[in-house]
Image (cartoon, rainbow, N blue to C red; front, side):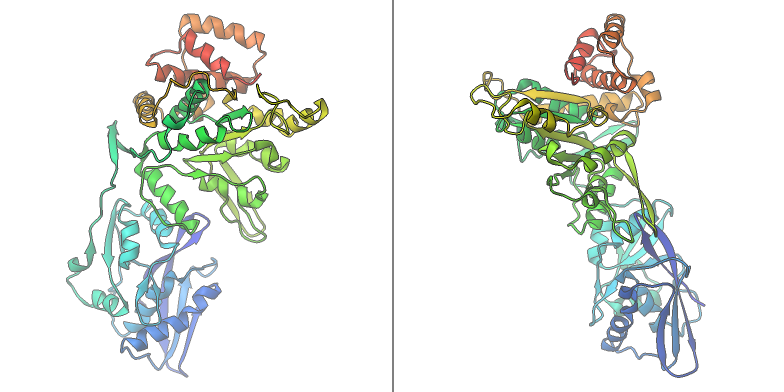
Length: 503
């Protein structure tokens, strides 16, 4: 019995599925078994039509196709091509499908189509199967060409696929990989990619020097950030520009981003521009965290992995959402549990948020009077709990006046500073940037000079800093030291870090 390898997606990971078939005497029939979904059940009609339209006779036998292992739920239309090849080449005795993974949906005319699950399937498989051979259509090949350790072969339709397995000259079907069209730097034999694209530029932001410096620290060290200020002072404006000055991305991060875009049914972009997710405050808890009644689906916090998750008008998000954010902000992962599935997502994003100082927004205004009473202000503030706010590294109060508008800095200048700080962190041997360091790594990399150590010991007592707050101040201080090109965290670095602490 010949076997064709394919795969099915289980949450974010691929499981290898063997497509088997038997042809026995009896009343002609065509059955697909193996705990399959409706989309696979419907492939019978697509496969029949595709073969008949391309002058291949359907065998007058009892045909049974099994997707093994049979105790795993399988879904997706990408099994069509493998099923069609089993039927069209059923009379060939030798194992011509060995070592090949086959993916593709069939049109009724026999043309092979791409699906949204092929890229995440191949990416997941390639991480565990070195020098993997894949047969797909050209549209799929363009997407998976950036995945390393792949041999990609391209066919146009079912006739082309049958010819591919019948010929010994397979090189003419081979598809060559393409290079990423981005700038790159090499650090310790690892290549990192970045874009010099600044669609929204910091040069548009007048004044707000302290907020811009906080944005620079946020980008350079992957620190969580909260802006508080009156409406129109530039909170959202600055937040949306941080995306363009974020650190370079490794190839794995670029492929992971493309995988999440594919699962979100978006066009895949192989660019080194990190994602920016901006859900509205009316979003449901399931849309933010992922979930569903029977099977867990991907949510905003997983889709923003390695990028930015931006919450505008932070207190207007439901309290249950804000409190549930504490785990992914602390652990950089989240487990979604349902009766039929348990899925763990990586959530290594930068959390950026903005809020008004009161319900009317004018509490900090220098030109407008606040219309709120003390009870309303307190109720508004109480929507954010202390444990949640303790996850924020940088807290910035913004004024609504532009008194230093001559001090203009461009995104390109800020981006160069971020890249320099990124290089320093990687050359120190850090796997994670400063904002995502573990407690043990904080002790290893966040070292203070003598003056800074004396000052910080005093600050711990005076401000009654918790263990988490101590680590947050040290991480931010480490990033400021990197931006200032200091080997150790200095007194000025730690003072600046303490100034961004929420009081």
